[in-house]
Image 1 (cartoon, rainbow, N blue to C red):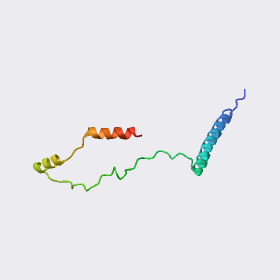
Image 2 (image 1 turned 90 degrees about the horizontal axis):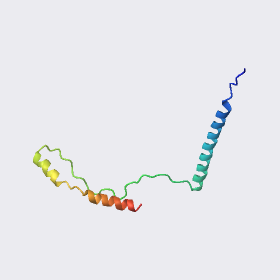
Image 3 (image 1 turned 60 degrees about the vertical axis):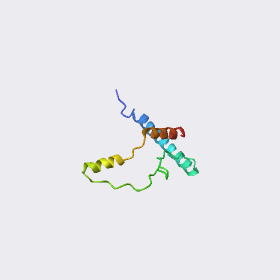
Image 4 (image 1 turned 90 degrees about the vertical axis):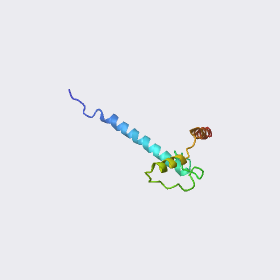
Length: 96
């Protein structure tokens, strides 16, 4: 009994051609939409605006090992409230 050696070749070739056709159709439609100015813009990362960029000059970093100076520097550090930060995030998220 003779066995066909190329029996699986035609379906594989058809799948490759079909996949290539889908990729080419997608690329062609994207190109046509992009040239017409109707292609989606995609995802953009938010860049800092003038209101989110910190202003002023930071104080120089101290290299002191004196405990009194270190304690004074720690006490001078201003830490914001996490509650106000969360409220700001909630209001920003609500505006989306």
